[in-house]
Length: 195
Image (cartoon, rainbow, N blue to C red):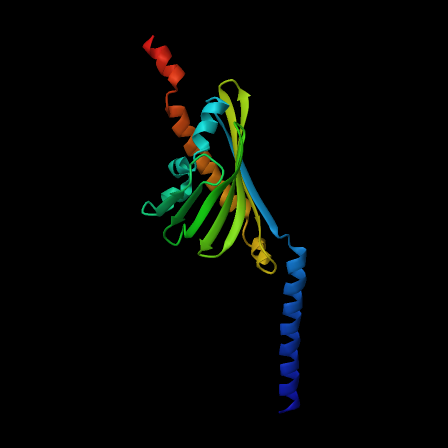
């Protein structure tokens, strides 16, 4: 080998080593955690809303993910609206395959979920819905999500804004929920109209 070839190979090796060191250092500088949350005010009582959102099967009525693949296969295990209930899905490339489990309920206030994704990639995250009374007949519903990416996969967070990606889906879902619940008559309204 000529000295010029050896110098070129050394330069290439140094560039590769420098890039690897950069990736390694960047992976420890970039945060591994991500989250998103959105909220909406719905003209219904907190109890009415909680009794609707506690049932995981109802989420298919308002979440955007159900709309992404109308032919998605769904299975349910356990008693909906209780801790331990699992909703699993398998669909097209957009929705993939995974499951969501109710892992905690604070009656009338909060539902916690664990999301487990299997395809197109394996990961897990935590999600929640919080129902907060604003007035007697107005309620704030907060839908949130948090997770983490292991190093060096966390470098993708430099190019993906999870708050924007997931947050916009939550926003659409919450607006769908608002439309569903505000267009549905309550028992009290029905009784008042008939009297």
